[in-house]
Amino acid sequence: MRFGRTGSVAEWRGMYARHRLDISVADISFGVLSCGRRLRRKKWEVEVLRLCSLEDEGLVCFSVRSGWDLWLVARGLRAGDEVLVSAITHPDMVRIIHEHGLRAVPMDIDPETLAPRPWTLEAALTPRTRVVLVAHLFGGRMDLDGVAKFARERGLLLVEDCAQAFQGPERMGDPAADVSMYSFGTLKTSTALGGAVLRVRDREVLGRMRGIQASYPTQGRGGYLMKLLKVLGLVAVSRPRPYGLLARACTRFGSDLDALVGGVVHGFPRMNLLRRSSGI
Image 1: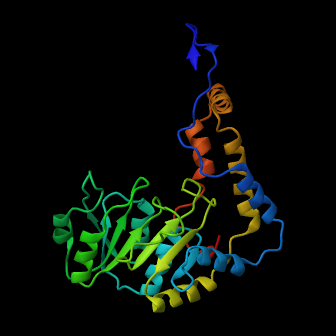
Image 2 (image 1 turned 135 degrees about the vertical axis):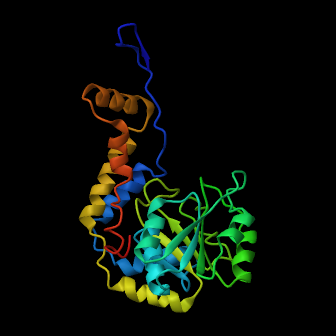
Image 3 (image 1 turned 90 degrees about the vertical axis):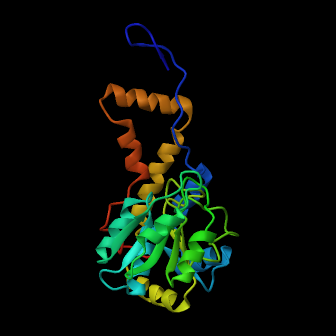
């Protein structure tokens, strides 16, 4: 927008939202209608895993964070064991590590490749190291060969956080990783406004994860419906002119536009929802 000398709007051109959600009105409408239907959750979970060719290695979770928590529970690491973690990652992933009595050890990353620097892997290694957790960042995928070789030679488990790196159901997880985690939260590619798919190579651990998750309550339809309706409103105003009007209204009434939008797309409390829901 362009303002006159007194601050009034002289010419209205609208403004662009910083992020366009990867979901259509048709997708949201389908979700709204589905909330009123009698659906069998287990059937849809099986269909999601079939689509990803993960019938024998996959698990549908509430989020990557809840899936990471679930894997740590099923894996049964000892208090004081260490997890090497990419220096740039979601803070809740580290909080979950600490919740399990484990120690998170940061690994510096190469700014050009976004992969952990080889020397930092060696420097961070101790007799208590058990897991290497790497995060693929900003929609790209790093080459895991070096990290995978390091983990394999030292008997460490390799977990890849692919929350920002979904490239289609035909590419679900690096063969070298023990666990691959994909998110379909609000800001993610091919978003379902929530949910995650994990690929777990160890069938025994996967079986324990499925058993533990079966005891969790499922996500309520009402809460998911409210999320759908909020995002529908956000999608409706995401074009330049209506988004600009929203920004102007926030300015006029003293509201924070970023806080308003963030409340819609980041509606995930920190730690108290990790074991609250079992599916999408």
